[in-house]
Every structure is written in structure tokens, then in C-alpha cells.
Image (tube, rainbow, N blue to C red; front, side):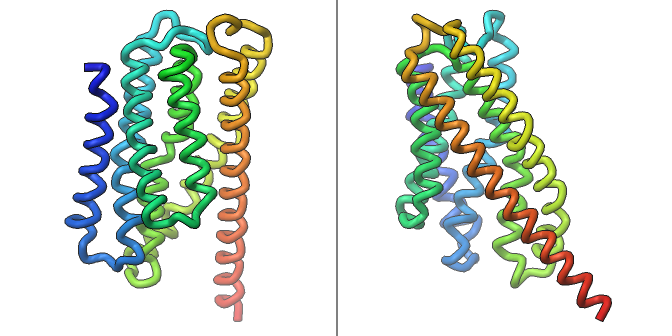
Length: 242
């Protein structure tokens, strides 16, 4: 079953994407349908990944930053690899110019693939990062879908405005504080040599570099959103005063 996990998950995400694109969002403008379909597979991955990863980590009695991957942890890694492969295809087809997201997906896949198929250790650390990355997924996708229709659907605009502050706050806490702390702990552990002979140096160093880069981009992204929200709210306040 473990060997079949990757093709089964990949086929499932592709199917979900196609159903979303051709059925669920068939009446949406071609401009927004690809993004909506992408949100659909992201929703199908995000929260389930958090639950599966949490369960697999808690079930691992030997869990640690360099512990051997368990079967359950490998299944979660295959689950996430399948999602990112599907979404990478989405960006390659519809947004080939979006090099930032394509690069993000390739880097993420590199981390998951090396953990799953090269090192066979360290899934506890990688899945902990996955939990932090996906814990905001449901809120982010709802926010994204509402944002894509906020200019032509009143209810979407209201939902977008309602979700923005709590989503930005949660995202800022996770990506700006909890994530960096976990990466710091990982770096201290690996740099101490505790994973020597278990995880190749080039593997854990590349993990740290990729994750630090991803967190840095995330912090820049959410900072820009906070600035936009502030300007928007200030603009509305000035209009009311006038």
C-alpha cells in the first residue's frame, strides 16, 4: 500500500482539480477558474495534511529531528508530494511566468522528496514545518476565493474584508514567530552533529536554506498585505471624514 500511495494521491489531486475546473467553477470567468481549481486542491490538502502529520508525529514513539521515518510519516510525505506536483503542473500550464511560485513548489518538493526517498530520516522535523505551513490553509483559500470575486460579488467583498485581519494575524504569528523558532531549533540540532551518519550534511543544510528562504518570502508577502490593508482602511476613514 505504501508503494502505491504516491500514484493514488497524485491521481486523486488531479481528479479534484479537473472536477473543480470543469464542473464546480465552470461558470466562473476563465481569468479566475484556474486559481479557483488550485484552491480546491489546496483545501483538499491543507487541513488533512495538518491532521495526518500531527497524528503520524504523535504516533512515533522515537520522534526527533533525526529519527527514522515511519510508514505513517512516509504516507503523509507522499500525500504532500502529490499535491505540490499537481499544483506545480497548474502553475506551469496557466502561470508559467510566475517564477516565484514555481520556484517555491520546486524547493518544497526537493525537501519532501529528499526526506522521503534520500535521507529516510527527519520526517518529524519536516512534517512539523508542514503543519505550520498548512495550518492557515483553509482560511487562506477561503480568503483567496473571496478576493478573486470581491470586485463583482458583494458577499465576496464582505467575506474578504471579514477574513483579512484574522488571516493576516494568524499567518504572521505562524510564519513570523513559530516557524523561525522551529527552524532555529532544527539548525542547532543538526549543526551539533546529532544527525551525523543519519542525514547527509548537504541534505539538512539544503533543508535549512530552503525553509529560511520560504519563510523570508512569506514574511515579505504578509507584510505587503498588512500595508495594503492599512492603506485601504485609512482611505475609507478619510472618505468618511470628508
